[in-house]
Structures are given as C-alpha cells and as structure tokens.
Image (cartoon, rainbow, N blue to C red; front, side, top):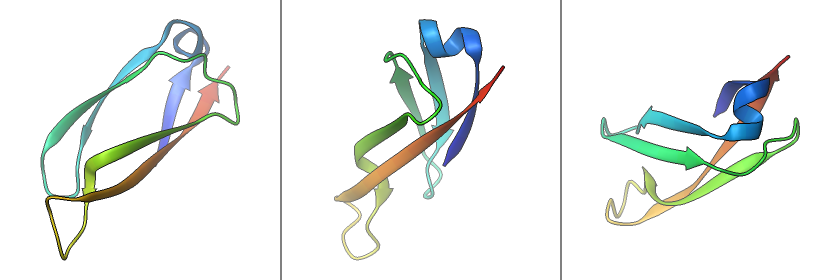
Length: 67
C-alpha cells in the first residue's frame, strides 16, 4: 500500500485508519520519523491467509511524502 503523508505528519506522526481485505477496520499508529524511503511493516491479521484466516501475512506501507 502507498500512503500519502504531509511533511508535518512525517515529523509528528500519523494515525492511519484502514480497511482490510475482508472488510474490517483497523488503526495503525505511525510514530517513527518518516523519510522518503521509509516503509512500515505490520505483522498479524491485517492480510489474512485464505487457507487459515486466523493467521496473517505481513503488510507493508510505503509513504509518499507531499512537500
């Protein structure tokens, strides 16, 4: 996923409200300083496995910094 983020949000953090592939709403807090090449990796049930929905794959968020 690519998430647009403002220059101010790269410094102070941002809360992302996302909808998963199976329709659930999740909240991800980004508290690190975001650089143009920064990627946030979220583990868990964000992307459920089709064979076993109780387990999940990693979910990578790339940031597009708007100057």
